[in-house]
Image: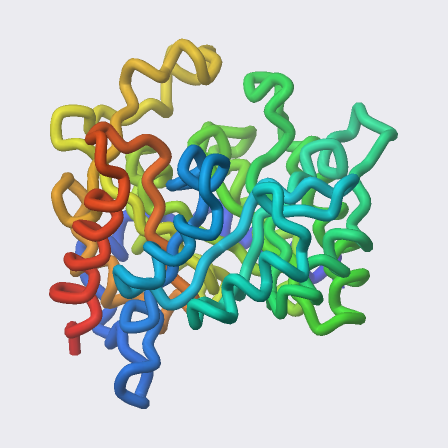
Length: 327
């Protein structure tokens, strides 16, 4: 099967990715059954409210539900203590249930698991157990090894892909699928003009590994999400719906920038409430079916107003008014 994946990779590597942006793929964002589409059932990545969750997890989840979010994507499990934000896993699940919040996906640290240089790997089996307790369908690796993003080469992405396949075999036994979430460095050029994300997609098995496209980071890399949906249909079952401040739209990928670390690029990064920034979500949304989208999550890495709940409500209101209604 991997030989077939490699053939597909070589085939795709030379395909241009601009055509999709110029000619929108006219699919509806809604599922055929009204009210059940990914934008009508919008979720939120809890990292957006990490400070609030640390201080008052139950009240924070109650407010998320009251705003209208239907599900949450988890992060930050303490494996040793078996807790999320200080709550035992069963207690955390009960709080979700009490507020009619589901959780389909979680981010679980797999940095060492995906790294060639680490032997002290994270426990994938334990992550799958936790995801199963919560009723999640996806265990998502939120990031490649960040120990030195400038050192990531093709062989590192190929190793990570092999590891994701192995984890996918483990999780499949529990009817859970592996996922991978991108940042910007996966779009830096590798040999033959391909990208790290291309390698990860091409060398992972579709029945074992899905991808969660962060719309902000691909746009910040100077590429269009639509191009990847055309290039790799049905591989992006999850999206992070995150907007970009209109004053900070310059790409941070390419040329001399590819020699810089994350800290050096932070000054070029600023987020915005969904619908208030520069990203054309209404166009991207029309590719939902093409991409294989099942779940969409609002996320904002940093919120710049004091009332964080007003921020996530603004994003929710935009999705409800503009994206959930697209035919």
